[in-house]
Image (tube, rainbow, N blue to C red):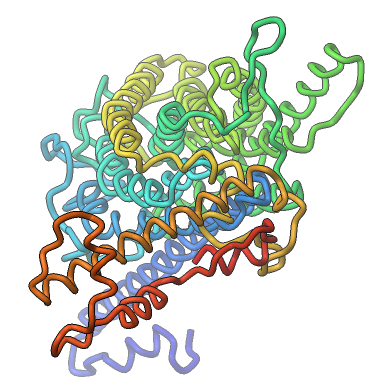
Length: 572
């Protein structure tokens, strides 16, 4: 410690040689302690920013997963909606969301303050001292919103995505955060007198983030309805699902690996401070259990599906898609108790999560719920299971390192924590349903939720973005010669012609108003085109036609059906 620039040397340079030896020792100890505090603050800030970056990188994982799960004709649309989710979440959480969730509180600290419904301070990040914490919490809020995006893929309007992501992250999700994580929330385990003496325990957001997002996805999918042709009634009268395979299994696999990698920031980063006492132990336990639960979910989903298919068909088939989704199910289910469970318990949680995923997908089909990326069984069903698992397998020796109350899972002989977890699940389900149900119903009623059926059939990339995207450009495709494409372009041409006629009518009315001419009937509008130019106005039939030609942004389609490449120029 004697090298130049060290903490010791810096404190020695500040030492007052006129002080007594005892006073000098006290000064040196205080100086070194202050320096270590500054170092700890820097380390914790970097740790939180790094963890937040990993969590936000989950947006890339969700985007790749969604890209691989949708059909090529909806690829651009799905990617833009994933981007809008993050943008809407950032604005909503910046303005009011963070204040409602955390305003005026100190995360992770016990308090004697009374219970509050939402926070009432720090709107627009005013007086927020630790902005790295806002960044970390924003990444969580964006994750909750993005869960819904994949479920509604291929049939939802753009405006609806921005509306629900903002509403979810600005109010619905923050109230859940405040109730469970904030030390003044009525379900928080950090209150001086928590519910049933223990409160709800959700270390990294199994209930707060995933169940909230998954239930929102279920409500939205129910109101929105399935994709065209997704379900049909078979000869036996039972509802049957038609498989809509995504265009790239490789992108799905890449997305899952990105999500698994980012989940280490999601779970281990939830200690918030890496230098605090016992926090490194909790962080490393969370990381290990995250790995084991993901592996358990993958193996169980893969092998159980092999067994089911073998019983039905006699063939042994290994489904990559089910293995990938089983991996995500294990990751979701361990999120709530990753820091508080033993390794063997994490494996059990992951194994059961893989089975629940398979059961959940079958349940969605039975009820006619169309989920393009299986987000509902992964995030809602496995999120609920993970929250219950906290009440079953939480080890008291780990729990007491972070939570002040003496609590344990049912396996260790304490049932109060399990009761609190069930109450927490009921609260989240009730709160989200009461708010998001009417919200999506209103969007559907005013026509902002579902895309036009013909646009859905030809693909949202064509109707919203000008053509299919392959390697960054447009390409000819045989589907452009289909009957549906012909109908779509014919309708677009009719819409343009209708718009042109409306503009012609407005210009003629303006022209007549300037000339003082009042038409007796509609034919008088056309007769007026033959009138001589208005005195001093410069208006004439020639001027009107020139203006209308300028308004014609799109050339006529012609007799033959255009290719996708031409369609790009015709759908500005």
